[in-house]
Image 1 (cartoon, helix red, strand yellow):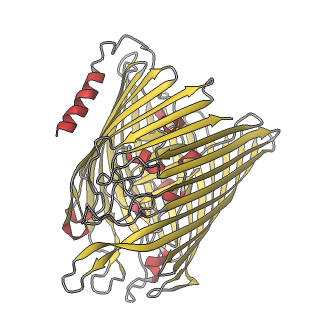
Image 2 (tube, rainbow, N blue to C red; image 1 turned 90 degrees about the vertical axis):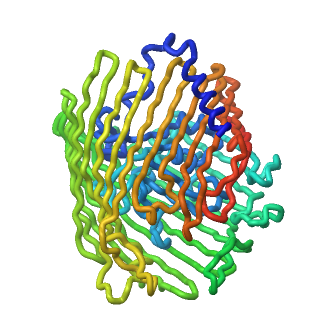
Image 3 (tube, rainbow, N blue to C red; image 1 turned 180 degrees about the horizontal axis):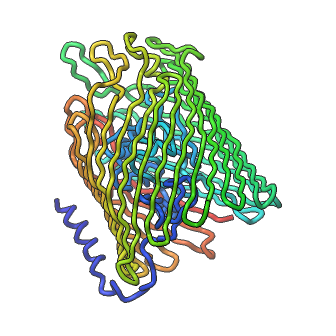
Length: 636
């Protein structure tokens, strides 16, 4: 409690700075002209979007040097990335609005990515390096109309970096830091990262090549109940390569190619299980998981007088192997998304599209082998979205999608999203919005293959989301938004308690909650932000999901070339499997960067979990204590 009071006192002092309103009256906390893509699938001013969309910009990424993709997503209201504070190789949970991984659509440059070889079919964010990313957009709520399966609780759109207009541009960065628990805190450098990015434009061709490598050691995945005898360290390594090439044929037509290879290897531990008492305890194991992912695709952008036509094709091959069990998993995805945005006038436009995916998997395990070709599925999705942006402030979006699936037949989803922008006075404005949207989650290949024999076909999970909320911007200094949501899940895919085979659960499952955020810029050098998430649903469905979550951050430009940030996070108590209590915890982090040589060289550092809080986000698994990170970024 003393730590919480200290944190609140420091932030309160910042809020009441005597210069609070003396400077920069024309600066906005949040630009209404910020361009958003994810909400409509085409570039749209944020003021014309009928929902609250959170954008993690390149500026935020640069000022948060040392943070990962998961760290930045964890700061967004409504999102809990479970496992993020554990070892680097820990399996991650993406919990948005009380949902699970399978209910979140992960996009890379607008393309829905997934892993058919995993049981949940979800994309592994451990594969992505933050240095490859230009920005991230987060859209909450059911969004299957635009993005298809999995877009039930939210969409995370990772937008990769683009080439510079110069003939050659390069960035090199490297960092090192500690990686220790709160019980065994030390200053040894046990986490390393090195990144190269080369890009440019030569004539009609632009290119980007990104190479990344990082690793960590020093922490054990599982935590020994005997604090004086920690388990041995579990090592994590990752390498990434991304290549993008675009050819501008003329002012209207751009052809593009991308290819990436992402590999990681991580040690992990296990459990001892007593078949008589059914009790389990963490055990030190020499297990290892290696993963190799290859992605490639071809893009076409054709601009014409009234709109734009885009073609996105992609192929993914994923191989995973764990030892010493020697289990092997392979997943293959091929697909395309073709869509056309046609503008009738400045106010009215229509988006039509057709998307498809073909999935296959192979699984070589002792108990449930699946031969290549035995587990396949494919689907075809035509979709339509109508957008109206009135000069009087009225906004309207509606759409529908037909999903035709090889397992269960057809399924239809839709959305309706009205909103209204209006001025409060000459310097303040407001937006109110509401939406009703449906979504679907297709069964994965593993679930189809392991379904109860008496079930002819597994049905897709159906989701309904109702939202209402507002955004306020006062005097170009304060921005406030709040969203209330209500969710229903029908035909939820679960397991028969006797056979552990896959079934559709009967009944309807509910979730509701509120997400709020306020940002305040009292002076040019200081920016403050606070957000809160509240979620309510049945206790049995809240495992590892906190009911309340607070995040507070203060950014301060100490000198023209020196940026600092202090953040505080509160995560509410929850439970893990077996009714194990996971206690609430508080984390305080500090970040700083300093630029020299005309901003071509940046030194950065961070201290996370400053007060060395001891906590668990997954029962019996280690979390990181107080740790530092120091780095250097050079613009070539």
